[in-house]
Amino acid sequence: VSPHIHSAALKAAVLDGEYKLYPIASDDKQGLADLLTKVRAGEIHGLNVTIPHKQNVMPLLDELTPTAKAIGAVNTIVLKDRNLVGDNTDAGGFWNDLQILLSHIKIKEKNALVLGAGGSARAVVYTLLQHGWDVTVSARRIKQAESLVTHYASRQLTAANYDVTTLSSLLSDISLIVNTTPVGMKSHPQGSPWIEGLPFPKNAALYDLIYNPAKTQLMKNAAEVGLPVRNGLGMLIGQALLSFEIWTGHKVSADKIDLNL
Ligand code: NAP
Image (tube, rainbow, N blue to C red; front, side, top):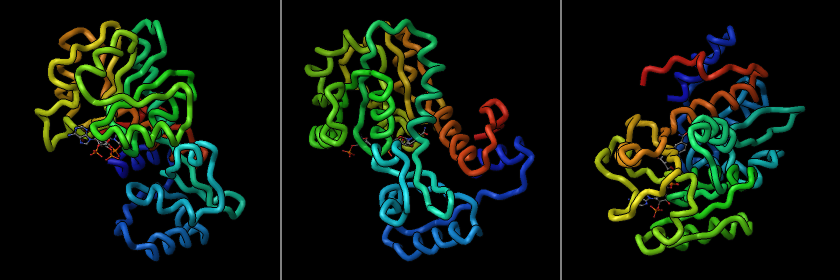
């Protein structure tokens, strides 16, 4: 999907260029280093990196932005004053798009429930904490949720067991649910990460990071009981356009991007 977004952004900004994929195996350290050499030499203007290189690449860079450092992952690399700088635009992409969803609800308490505690949860939790939200992260492996809590060491962040009893006791305060698990993706469209028998909170909104399918089972179920819902396409486009701006200095708005997924 990213090449489509960047091609559209190049077109919208009237810039020449190409966004190409460079597949690098997870254990190919030399391949990653060689790619960075091309950035240093100016052969490549900027890079996105994805799993598992979001972390692997960090020791190879000269500088990290405060956001990349805090999250502990890099998705965007640029050469600045001869330094390779690692940034993370996932958090900003999520936050900007989330505002569209939040405009549909009256937030009583800034309390969010994040399902899943993997890579994307880190960026989501980071930005929610930064903006003053209290966050409960719930994952099927409580150890993973606890390790995320330890990572941020914030009083605003707690881990919760992924079961009906625990979650139903905290739902009444929740204004926002964010799904960061892959459950509901095209590969298993019938699945939902929402535990069976757990009611949805009232006056809350749901953000699902999944964008394919456009409407997950979780989104359908939440919408049926009146929750405003939004999928992760806006986040995907948002993080790409923030990276694009870092590389080119051109701000392209999302409505200029035409994607036929
Ligand atoms: P990840 O690092 O593998 O984390 C996934 C989390 O979901 C883990 O906590 C994992 O627990 C949990 N999980 C997996 N299967 C589960 C199940 N059947 N029931 C309950 N929990 C389950 O993955 P990620 O990189 O965070 O990505 C997660 C999803 O977000 C993917 O669908 C990805 O496409 C989407 N995403 C979207 C955007 C966007 O821009 N919209 C950006 C990033 C990611 P275990 O470790 O126990 O499996």
